[in-house]
Amino acid sequence: MHFNDIPELIGVFCDLVIAHKAMVGRHVLHGDLSPNNIIIYKGKGYFIDFDHAKFLNDDGKADASPRSTGTIPYISFHVLCLMGDGHLVQHTPCNDLELLFYILLEFTVMYLGPKGILAPQPSEEALQWDAIRRWGLTYKSITHDGLMTSSMWKREFIRGLTDLPLITPYFLPCQPLLDEWCQTISSASTQSMTLSHDQICDILTWGLDMVSKQDVNIPPPTSESASQSAATVAPSLPDPSLAVRRSCHSKQAPVKR
Image (cartoon, rainbow, N blue to C red; front, side, top):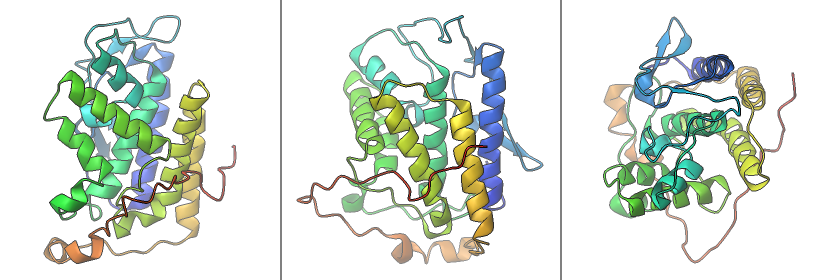
């Protein structure tokens, strides 16, 4: 999924949330949202590959199933916990709204900029603090323990109990948007509330407006310079003796439309 700049990327996720709301209105869930099942065409975001689509019942949930579908690094922590415990899984629309957050977050960590230029791989020492890549590693071991571990890491991250992700310099303007989305997921999970499409649309619209007003003009890295950027994006390791709870909440809340 290649994009041209940050405003286009945020706009694409707005498109996806709107499309997802329309699908839910027709009682359909995609069933396997991931970067591989999203495309950008003429600046707009679209879902593709509905092989694992599910129908929603009148209660807004899919039928309970002993087996879940999806790609582990992007599945919501609640669904991963059910899978790890061996419980029946009922997918809901709000699970997908959390899942879309993980996809956008991964873009800001795994890439140096648009056009698919990957960020340098962290050292083994730094990797233990990198939540995004740890979620990906559990995908290689789809066992009950692996699912529970991934669920725990995601839950701790969403609730502000782990270190900030290693966002690359180009994507730093996305930080307030990601913080707000993260906080919204956290509040919904701790207060047993349901995420809504309108909430996430408001956050994305607010983030897009904020980025546009900043007149962000960070030149994207070239493929030649990517290999020279490792020192720039290499993380400084946090002190494991410091148990500091970060706050996901941004300084400015999104304005309701």
